[in-house]
Each structure stands twice: as structure tokens, then as C-alpha cells.
Amino acid sequence: MKAKNYLIAVAIFGGMLLTAYAANTINQDEQQTAKIQRSAIRVPTHG
Image 1 (tube, rainbow, N blue to C red):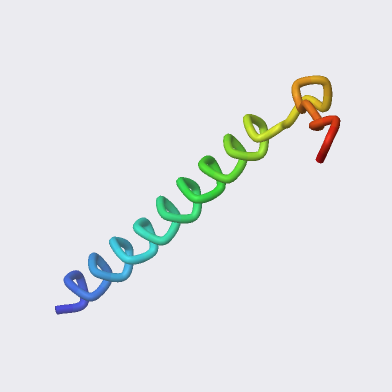
Image 2: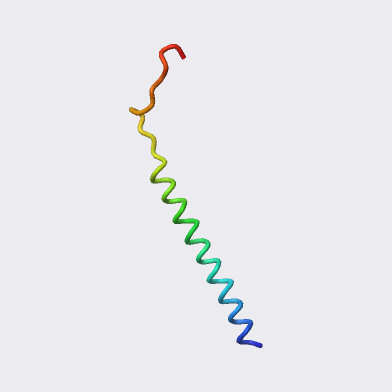
């Protein structure tokens, strides 16, 4: 019974680590690709 509880605890802890790592990876990629170049933005002359 103890081994089963330890196994469940390790599985939950591993799942949390995997989720945290995946979330950090996704956020870093979005920050790097979301840069906007000001020269690419055109401001309308009448607007």
C-alpha cells in the first residue's frame, strides 16, 4: 500500500513538473515571436 501511495505521489509531482515546463516553453516562444517592427506599421494619412 505504501508503494502505491508513493507511486501516485511521484506521478502527480512529475505531471506538475511537465506542465510547468511546457507552460514556460510556450510563453518564451510567444514572447520571442511577438516582436513588432515599427517600420512595418503604416499610419494612414487621413486617419
